[in-house]
Length: 79
Image (cartoon, rainbow, N blue to C red; front, side, top):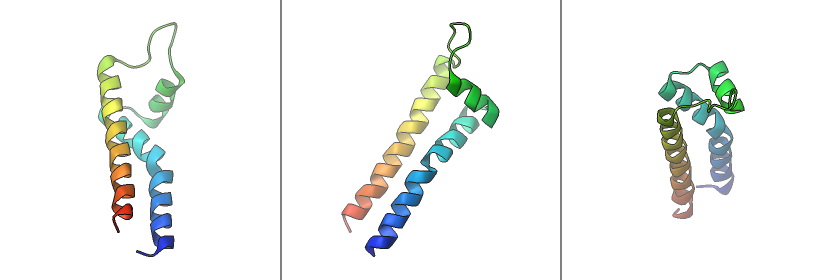
């Protein structure tokens, strides 16, 4: 693979990662995008803005997406 194409593909993948994470969290937790951003802001009156179940889903999604990104990077190293 040409170096420019590899760099371009990795750049695109990395820059879209936050949007992909947000969209998957919204889908997994049945949240709208405004709800996602309200939850990101944090606690309300000393209470957590997310449940333990939601926290587990969020961590699972983030780990999976980061693992996929690392695998993509690794696939370019082997070429």
